Image 1 (cartoon, one colour):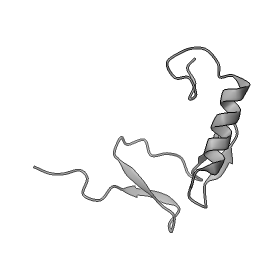
Image 2: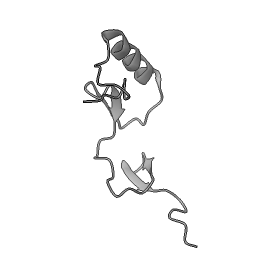
Image 3: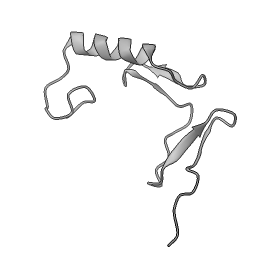
Length: 75
C-alpha cells in the first residue's frame, strides 16, 4: 500500500517524515471550516470530495465545492 508521504514506494513513512508533514500542514493556510484529520496528516473538508472528475473550488461561504469557472470549455 502506498502512502501520501512516500507515494513511489511501499515503505511506510518514518516518524520523522510524519512529524514533518504534520508541521507543514499545520503551518499551511486552509479554509476555516476544514478540520484536522490525523490519519491523513492534513486538513480535510467538512463534506466529501466531489467524485465527478471535474475541477472544483472550495467555497467557504457555502461550505461546499463549486464548479470551476469556465469549465468545461465548449468548442
